[in-house]
Structures are given as C-alpha cells and as structure tokens.
Image 1: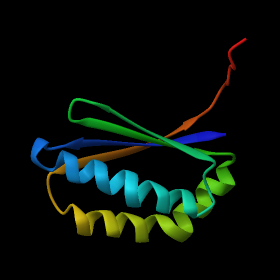
Image 2 (image 1 turned 180 degrees about the vertical axis):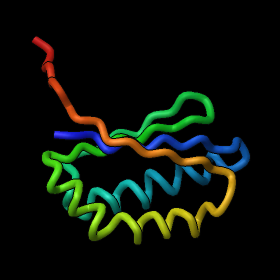
Image 3 (image 1 turned 120 degrees about the horizontal axis):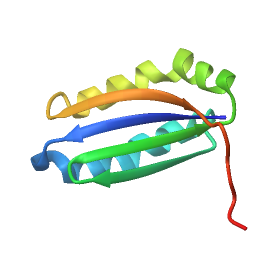
Image 4 (image 1 turned 180 degrees about the horizontal axis):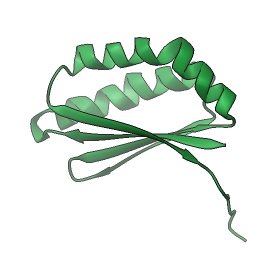
Length: 99
C-alpha cells in the first residue's frame, strides 16, 4: 500500500476556486480512474495536502503511465499560475485501526 501525496501552496486570491476545482472535479476524476481506493484533502492556511491511497505499487505505476499526464495538464490549464505543487510517494509501513 502507498499514499501518493500532492502538496499545493495556493495564493489566497485563488483558494476558493482551487478548493472547488479539487473537490468537484480533479479528485473525483482521479478516483474514477480506478487506481486509488480513497483520497483525503486537507488544508493548513494556504497549504493543501491531497493523499491518494493505492493498494499496490503496480496500480500507482499504471496511474502514472496512463492518466497522470492528462490530469496534470487539465490542472495546469485551470491554474497556470498561483500554485506551487510538489509530489511524493509514501510507502505505508503500518496501518493501525482503533481498538
């Protein structure tokens, strides 16, 4: 299992549009690819984190090979400026359900 985490630092004047785009379009489109089991969307001031949970490295690799470029291009078309994005992949070492 892994988390594909995207961190976005968003300028204040476009934050509302960014949140709407992410919740109404971008995140649902990524989940619709079928490569991810779930996602979270969190914010702290002007910084946002989106985590996509993939059940395997193979599913994540398929997303990168088949859909990532198209979805990133759509994002860039909607937000050509005002957002700095970084990405990382985190291997889940342990998952601990509450007792």
